[in-house]
Amino acid sequence: MPSTPQLTTPPPVDTQAFDPASVARAALATRLLFVFFGIATAAWAPLVPFLKARMVLDDRTLGFFIPCISIGSILMMPLGSFLVARFGCRRVLTIGSVLLLLAYIPITTVSSAFWLAPVLLCYGLCTGLLNIGINIQGVSLQKQTGRSMLSGFHGCYSAGSIMGAVLVSLLLGSGIKPLWAVLWMALGLLPFIALGGPRCLSSVDAQTSSPRFIRPKGIVWILSFFCLVQFMCEASVGDWSAVFLMQERGVAPGHAGWGFAAFAAAMAFGRLFGDRFVQSLGTVRVLVWGTSLGALAYVLVAVLPWDWAALAGFACFGLIVSNISPILFTLGARQDKMPLSEALASINTFGYIGCITGPLLIGMVAQSSSLSVSYCVLALALLAVAFTAHRKFG
Image (cartoon, rainbow, N blue to C red; front, top):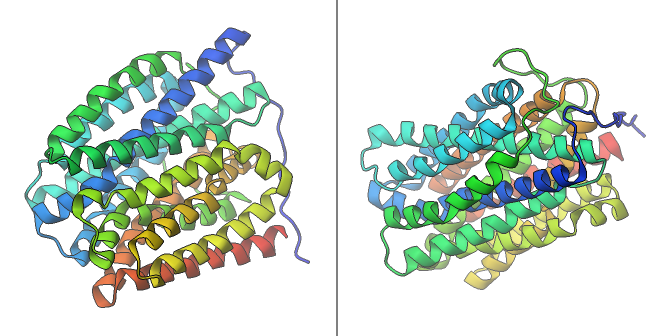
């Protein structure tokens, strides 16, 4: 049996003195901003078919443009880690949340291929800043309280994803133009920023010296590879599920966003019970069986010819892999080879590399065959994660 990489559990770091009331306020703020982030990012999936039609893009061309989002997020990871260490989560998350909402305006109005890449790049920069900031906020609060909280926080994100996908899908399905749909969404999200941002941590255990590329060390290499594949598969639902339901299953454009809504709903349900579930079965079993069964769900989406079966497959995939990302971030916080902010930035960076290669791979395979075949390729990637997890940790 191969040796098992060792993880240490460092004691909670007292970077900011809290009384119980302050802890409760910080936890509530964190949950609000995870919900906000879920709603805001879920709006992207229902907008993709409208963007594709407005720009008159084929699958391959769309597959080349979508990775601009992940490129922006990757560029932001080391800079975001530096900004959080320098200014704290409170400022970064408040400003980043406003910028993310503003980024949707050009997405719903751009009509030139020349401007599409920079528009998506800016959107990626905003999502990357919130991603690294909100995960550092959640992990830091978890370390300070000494309680397992990250799966619950990610559950709030998934709950927000449900609300965002349903809200925008209903608005678009009623005939409202994409621009007005995102403006209504932004108006409803402003209270989340006002209530959550000022109550975030002003300082965290986030030691980093400069906004530079962060090379993984030790077990972070393995966690980064897992996150790469995980994000690649999750992005395939967000970026391509609506297109898949339209092209492969004949679903109307206004209702194609329900695939992502089903995925997000199942993921939220799985994460609500995630902490207890992982403690009962163990992280290795969740990693191995979760990725193995997730591959099976992808195959079912690809081969079953009914629209309801595709919706059920997306939901099963969300439920099965719901706790993989929180496990990876928690393990990244427990290792002692890298500072917290740098470890999470590294894991997130490789995750977004997966977000780049995923849409690109799907677009290329779909252009030469079909989106169904593309999902089967992703199923093979999930099986590779299951095999690696079993070999390294089993």
